[in-house]
Image (cartoon, rainbow, N blue to C red; front, side, top):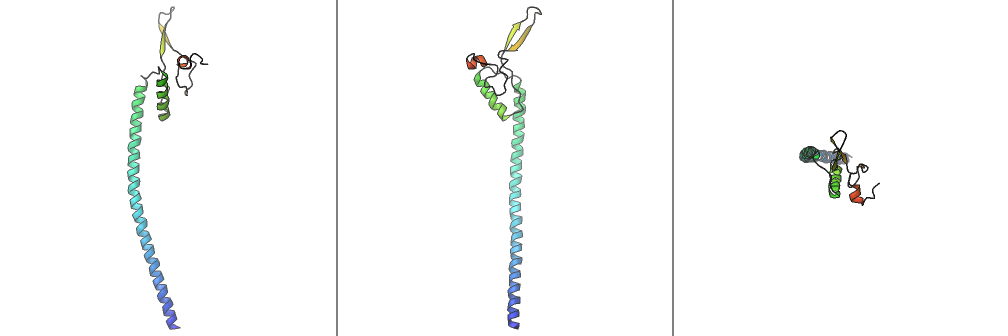
Length: 137
């Protein structure tokens, strides 16, 4: 009986030793992967930060130039639609304007060529007659 108890005690000691080593290995690997993924997270967040800064700079430059941009052709309208999809904060640019002389005041007033085509999804804002062949609403 004593031999049996000593064998059981030895087996229990070996099992505890194995479990202890496994726990140490688990802590080691957990720390290893935490370090590795921590470095990866730092690299990714730095790249994302640079990309966000670049996007903000591009958007600022577009806002500065946007005031001078005028939609004249349907291709311009398509380009504006693409830019507005990428940068939703950009306003709709003005279309070409016609100068009309006012005989009473002696001044000139400008108005858009196609004021009824104001839909933001319009392919050619203020160019409905040219684009749709004068069948615009």
